[in-house]
Length: 111
Length: 118
Image (cartoon, rainbow over all chains, first blue to last red; front, side, top):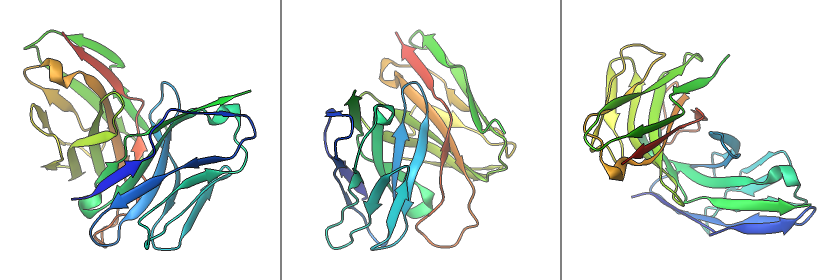
């Protein structure tokens, strides 16, 4: 079956540091890949997505590239802000439009 | 647009009690989903619906029931609450025109219901 393995947290960074959160996946066929973000006390919201190999998703300074050869979709941001503190989930969409989520990575950015 | 709304926000149940978690969306989405999120874990799909009158099981359906009589509403029913059902429950919706097996659709999530079973 489908699965998503995410870098374990928590991750603590200083403001303006570089962020990488690793995500690898196992899936049959050609899944779409997503990063969702969950701010404290809120539901998940889409951060970015990529629907085919070599696609790059980007939003709010975050980027991730769909790498089929390494089955990866790592999240990066060049300079994090305190407001980026949240839990980040990598996910893939397989059959029947069901999302399979990773376990989430808690990010804390210190001023 | 209110998006996806869920009620209640918090609830404490005793073992064996029943309750219904409400979910509504005003985006005219055809797909709706129920997930549970356990501490330190990703979300797991409980049930989903592809349209009014059509529901199907997800990864962890045992102990739950759903119905979808309208496009807008997708309630989740717990019949005999157990401590293992202590979790945060999220409802989500998306719009799909069908087609490929792998979906590119964005799911929109509600704020969640925190349920404790004692």
